[in-house]
Length: 317
Image (cartoon, rainbow, N blue to C red; front, side, top):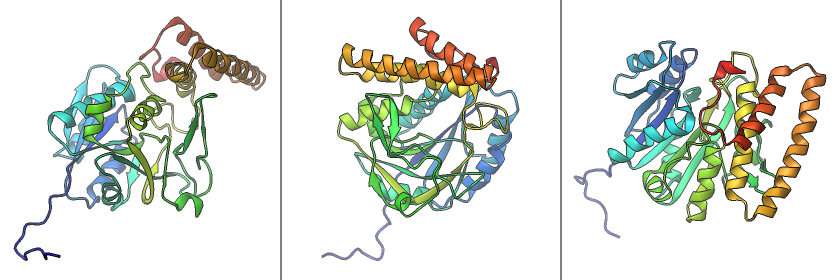
């Protein structure tokens, strides 16, 4: 085998555009930026898409990461349209990879090196995501998806980190909280469906990518930490805020309908789903949680009214 010349230039590290959508993230963007400065990978650039933040967080990110690209919007784009704007920038500027990344995360120094090493021309890679506040627990729905019932399956979400969660494997779906995607995949598959606004848009897109032969790999040696739902409710509100419950309810109906094999299959799902929502509604009323009850009912009604995209803001429910 021919040995490389000592004067041969080293291979260029693939370029990575890191797309982070920001919406009033002042409480956590400082720590996000600090962890980004420690990332060792030599060839990346941060692209911040700001969704009409009013808390100064966009300007703070620009100050903390001076070479970042800041794309401002005068409306709340949500994660689907927000990511699309950042992806479009990456495609226009010929990045090799797009890293979709929540800005309520804290990054480890080598996570990006490890993801790039695992990814390829037709291979996406996602890391192990641990809860920021309890780093013993997994915070990701990476795993499988039951398209008949519209639920995630075989995930480690909410479970303690373990040997099983530390084994690389191929996945059916994962969160775009952090996902490294070859830029060419967006050219082939298209951008995210903005009718979701947020929640389930990655499940939809990954289904389409895998149908075209792309692979999705879980690489647990790459690790980040996540403040879950940091932008969808007040601090301490927990994982299932009314805002998130509304969009998860509405979009689950849309997701399964979009990919159902037949009207009959969707009718069976809808009957199962609506029976379950009635049970949850009764539980919320008994436990005096009117905001969750209101979010659930409105999510179902808005789907059947055809009200998609951005229909509810964080404070509306």
